[in-house]
View 1 (cartoon, rainbow, N blue to C red):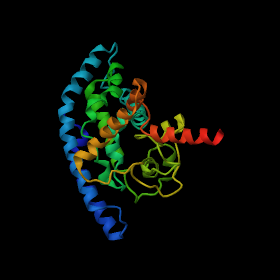
View 2: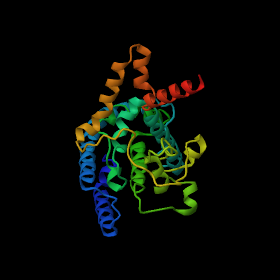
View 3: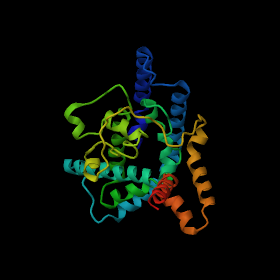
View 4: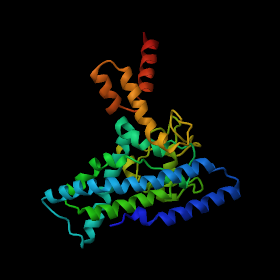
Amino acid sequence: MLKPTIIAIPVFALLIGLEAWYSHRRRANAYEARDAWTNIFVGFVSVGFGILFGVFVAVIYTAAYELAPYKFPADAWWSWVLLFFVDDLAYYWFHRVSHEMRLFWNFHVVHHSSEHYNLSVAVRQSWFSGLLHWIFYAPIMLLGFAPWMFALMHGFNLIYQFWIHTKFIKTLGPLEYVLNTPSHHRVHHGVNNPYLDKNYAGVLIIWDRLFGSFVPESEEPKYGIIKPIKSFNPLWINTHGWVEMRDAMRQRRTLLGKLKCIFGSPNMDIEELAQNVRAAQNS
């Protein structure tokens, strides 16, 4: 079964082209040629790796489904409604952990490392994320949803997220209260202090409102990551996070310190520096 995201590639390409043309016509500077072509190349290679990792992930999902004590009927409409909410909630927590734990951030940083915000950034995805991302979704099969049902629903969830990577749609009125929108997702990609690590939603922004991670757009976001990589090398884009983690581990003398470099916050060094400054000020 082809993933919906793979089937949608021609549509993605068309929309990226149209937005790039519109940006050029408006002189909006939403695109930088090297960045956009890097995003597209990284995206195409990620599809190949996704197919490769998909083989063993499918085995895991199938095994999990076989262990489920109850199987949701695929011909019942309510199964699909329930699956939509379950999948979107699982995505929220996967996304949040991918920002709060360095191990998973090393995959996700690929998507955030562009200093631009446009539709081509949506396809800038990690080559190696298939190694671990299944951990967040295998429980859905254990609940009793068939792997093909999950693949279909999750694919549509990711397709929805494509179009919100744009500067050209400002707000959607009352829908802003329920849906993840371009405005909400611009916040997510911002490294400004009020925006950093906020708005993790896939389709529904209600999860962020419920779990305290929502921030509305109030100023122009600064896009990228705290430590810009300043590179268009696709391999470095996919590996620099791991190199930085290795270097951080080498600086730690204790096992606990090294483990924190893996399972702690990717901003651990900055947070520790801030703590030391506060301690010095209070002493």
